[in-house]
Picture 1 (cartoon, rainbow, N blue to C red):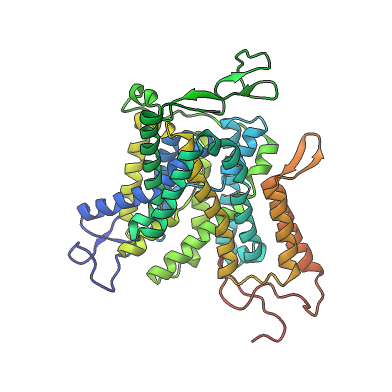
Picture 2 (tube, rainbow, N blue to C red):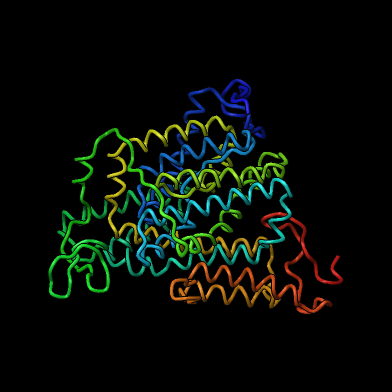
Length: 481
């Protein structure tokens, strides 16, 4: 791909009805301003999700910039996109750590998932986008996205919310009000605004009410006799103690410039099996992004769908190989493009460069790591619920028919298996649990029931007529036009 952009018009804001196409740009100062908007739009989620996964936010921000550049190169500049941190692996990371894994185990599992997405992208590029619809129809895709989000509810209830319930409640209410009352660009950064509000509220409460007494995971570990111990487990648990909500000591001691903490991945089969189901969510996210850009620009982007999937696979693989977070295309940045009518990839290169510079500032990473647990408690209630409801959005937009037992039964079973974190012990060393078990249940159940359904289609019909969320032909009931 040749990196270069034609100047759109006089380089100023496009006239009504016109757009700045991916291969065009405005003047460089204006392009830099649009790039800054993309940074702000992706910023909150891109560093919050690594924090929730226990990964280095500095490294995640830096690698998101690198992954974005690679994505733009692989799709030959046809699909403007920013690759921020994926939320689909937060539950996976929590499950892996609950089973005794560490950050290396988490990133090793994510690396394999990224490689799998790369393979899917190559297959889609060779066979066409219809293959996605045949394997992952909307009923299945929506279920997987939903169970990934709702499986995280215990993380909120057991880890973040109890650290400071009143700050969590205040942050939650503020986030909801921002989302509903604000308009345009400001509503799209509601999570970031809620984070700032939660920080300020925590600081005010520290000054006015003094320290809070709560349990901080991994800190103040005591055994049954009250002696300090090294790692959390059945005989070594975290206990409640008084502490400030906001602690900036690590921020003041951090350097302004330096490389993030890199680490090599570690591969464990049980962790990899937990991490593979989110591949379906990544496929849905990237496909939806390509379709949205296609609709807004009027370009036929179906031929580059495989490239987009493969590019995200490359980004996730590379980021996790050095200890970073998984990547995905961001709806927040779709919103910026829709609001500005500027689809120039030049703005995304600017955003990527800014992200890399942020990643090289350890002081910024220390500030992110200082986010109070109560603030995360309020934000995660909204974020995790929104992830889950994105699955319902896929069903609604594709008019999935839950009067059809082929859709209803496997989806219902999968959601309970995942949300309840049910475990199926294949062997003593090979458990299937939660997200992995639910995904396998809906995928196998849907296709198996479709294979044995009555040939007259009684009770059948996968979805009502209309376009599917992830492309491909639509099956109709007998007699439908």
